[in-house]
Image 1: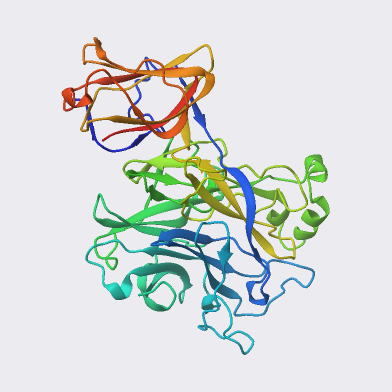
Image 2: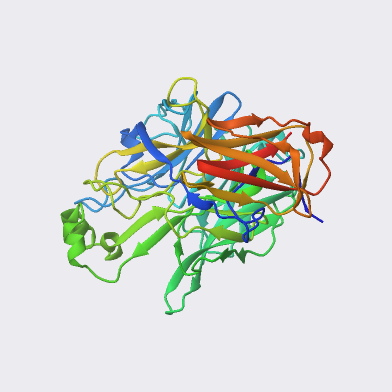
Length: 474
């Protein structure tokens, strides 16, 4: 029996639908493009360090939560405890972010600030809208954070009715390291809460390796035992700092993750002398060798079951062109979450916006930059002008029309046709030449697709200087 995809949007981020024997179209991992600086942390209480932050859409606004803390400078630290501030910002379009005076936390005798929580024990703060239909309105917004227990760290939650005023909740688990960004969400397909938390394991060389564990709950209070996630065709001993795992909002049956990969080389080499910021890098090593030797970048991974992930070994976000503030331990930390925003240019298709900090370790204000990516544009299948082909495994669909996310050159094109289970081509279901660039183009056939819905078919896509990112029957 073929795969039943119904009317789900399917992406080519994995091999789930691909007939590997017949497919010649290349797989291509795409990277987001760095855009403008959207916010600068220049308030006195925002310190000079900002690593973990969250963005999500809530009605007609976008919300952002971020943690502020001091990095090292000549006096070792620029702020006195309690130095962990959880701040809040919001935006209408994802480019201009406003920091409202919330009047909640007093700092230096004033509550005119955008701080929602102040503490001396928090490592990160992840906030989400609880979409469980049984969730109490008083707990619509939930946050999880790391708390220092009597003997070890613990993962706790906070709750809020408005996303601004939070109160302490309860412990989720004490089985883990949690010394990084931990995340949680409600999975509408499984009807469970899913949490991804930081832990460690012993590597092949006996050294500690940072990893990610998953645990689930029906009620947000009773949680399963944390279990390590596994990776397909990717080294298990990659040092994983953050995880960024979330259901992709346009195809929630697929989890996507944007983890930070930590790379620490064994010793200082001549390359470090040539690498940007060498003098300041040497200075940071006075506090800890890894502060100078380590560099980070961002990865992409995906999963359909939440436990087994396909992780691409190539970087999704590279540190980028060398400058005084780049190529440091802290590059590639993408915010948790992505936003659907208006196009950068005119009336073009909407795009995905990501956010990442810059200027860490600089003893100056941290900046936040926006990055953009094509909608569904994580991975494509494509070919050059000489051509290539994508063939799916047999599947069953439900819908009247086929919509595709694709791109061609002016001279290139794409052709889609269907085969039955025996490989016979259905002549009336041939698109002919398709050219253009659209995230949601309806494909025209001579006969309505409703005539073959519910039957096992294979979709064949010929590509000539073209790429396809996703498709959906509806």
